[in-house]
Structures are given as structure tokens and as C-alpha cells.
Length: 290
Ligand code: ZN
Image 1 (cartoon, rainbow, N blue to C red):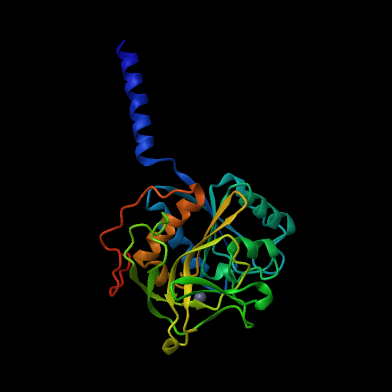
Image 2 (image 1 turned 90 degrees about the vertical axis):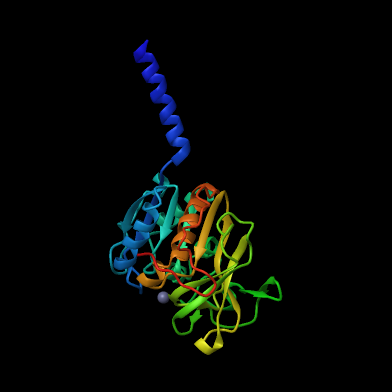
């Protein structure tokens, strides 16, 4: 009798514990090539996800150089794949595996220069919505800008991908109804970063959640540029932020929260941890994770 009660209680406790904490979401970070310091940023991205208690993160590192033929991560073992990769093309089989993975419901997370990668891979550009450099131009798709209270597709000719000087800049929420941005201050100051402007791409099934003004005084485009956005691709969800140039930019508390929420949303379509930390940045104050 006592044994049965103990078992029942254990079962109840496990049920309660799992409903309190949710399932642990497995995430795969892909890296190995980047014109940025991926050896410094990947461990930070991993730590920021795992410190939430919601994720368990593995890393798949592609070999250096043009021959990536041995790079075949098992995407399907994960709820989301986070790209910190900007480099040589992957083998066709690996590209196809990522397409199928997202199409059939997997999550994809794009951070900063990952949107420079693979300029000629059509489906990758459809998945990420917008990208920069690598010869991208008006043939890649429109610029996406926020003008006079709405999102505008700007098809004028020009290069895709540019940035001015690094500086702190305000992230302005344009869609507070989405779970990734819900409850955030309508403007918050992001720590010193590269503000990517003039990105272009297919931008289909894309939802812009936040923008930043690329100030011409800092060498920027003079436009309000997408900084937090999502793309629906097949059954899958893509969370994309052009923020995250350096370890310092990645340690911005606003970036950390955006990354945690965006990755959970890409993995599950929901955000369960809706409480903002007390040290979340304000409109005029940056905040760095200690
Ligand atoms: Zn950069």
C-alpha cells in the first residue's frame, strides 16, 4: 500500500515537475567557418540558451576550407538548428537535409553573419528571408523597410548588405502581439553592434517584429531596418536576428532574451518564459549580462 502511494506520489511529482519546467528542447548550433569570431561566440550562444534551463545544446563544427563533404549533421535529432556559420557551401545532401528538416516542422535560428552565407542557395535564402553580401542585389529580392507606420518592399536596384560604424542602437518593437516580442519595452537600447542595413532577399511569409534606425551619422542607410523577424517555411519556423557581431553584442541582455524566446518559438511555436529579467535594457540604457 505504502509502496503504491509512493509510486503515485512520485508519478504526480514527475508530472508536476515536467509541466512546470516543460520539456528540454534539443538545439544544434552549426559553426566552423565565419568571418566573425565563431570560436568565441558559439560558447556564449550555447551558454545563453542553456542558462534558461529550457535547452540542451550540441555543436556541429564544419571542417575548414572548401571541402565540407564530411559535414552531415543529423538535423532531425533536434527541435531547432541555430546557424553561426558563414562559409563554404555544404554538400548537396546536407543542404537538402536542412530544407527537408525545416519544411517538415523543424526550427531554424539565424544570427548575424549566418545571413551572409550561401548567396546562391535558393531555398536557404527563402528560409532566412533576407541576406547580405556575396553578390546579393535586386535579383535576390527587395529591401524590407519600415516607413510611415508600415512595412515596405523596396525593389529599387542596389547591393544587398551594408553596415556603418559599430555603436549602441535602439531596437523598436513593431509587433508587440508576437510571443517573441510581447511585453518588451517598445524601445530598448542594444549594446554596441554592427547594424546591418540594406539586406535583401525573397522575404516571403516574413513577419517583422522589430526594427532599428540605421543613422546616416553612423554611416547607415537612413532607413528603419529589420532587426527581429520570423519566416514561415513549410511547416517550419525561422527566427532571424541580424544582431550579434561580437561577444559584447551577444552579451546584451536584450539579445539574450530575444535569442531565448526566438529559439523556443522556432522550436515549438510558443514562448513559455514570458517574464523579462529585472536588468532588461531600457530605451536609454544598455544592459550587459555579467
Ligand atoms: Zn559583423
